Image (cartoon, rainbow, N blue to C red; front, side):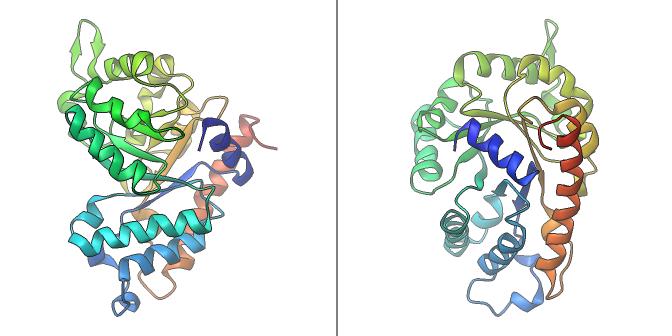
Length: 277
């Protein structure tokens, strides 16, 4: 999916919502426990109930890897289900990979060639040769960790050397020589909304994947105010606040209600920027 198509989907759905499929098998509703594949059944019902309200889904790979082969099968079935039934939805492998070049090449093959993901999250700490293999796939995206929403981000990401913070160096170097707005996005946490102004000075046109609203307390209003550009430029993720909003047999209906609340707020900000009518 290219940059233009992603923006078209945002305008059509009046939404820049990404739902994180952090499908913890220990938290699934009791009504699914006897299913042949409870995680996939849970994901399927969440997807079917929210697909018209979202532009992206983001399975966090850790919640599948932890269950071994069965977990991987649930992940593959989930991604295939989205692509077969809702092919215009952008699907992100939240895998946070990144290693020496030949190893990154194998990670890229896993997620961008052997599974139909549109994008994969990558840690930039090991530098250009650890990222480049992910940028070699036509129509696919790499999403670099830039400024994350967790408390530990303060340990390294704000390190200042010669007047430049580490996350700023990541943004500047990668946007200038590793990729373009057509194949590279950045993770910027909603809990760091005050930094969006500075980030947009460095990467004014790139899409930002923004976790941290909902359960983590980030502000959607501030994210839109400071992070949105003239092509929206945002994919704002909510995971637990939507998928685990209810544990009854009606969990999928409640998930839809929560997603609709977020989409409704998003449509206000899109109208304010005159990106939709």
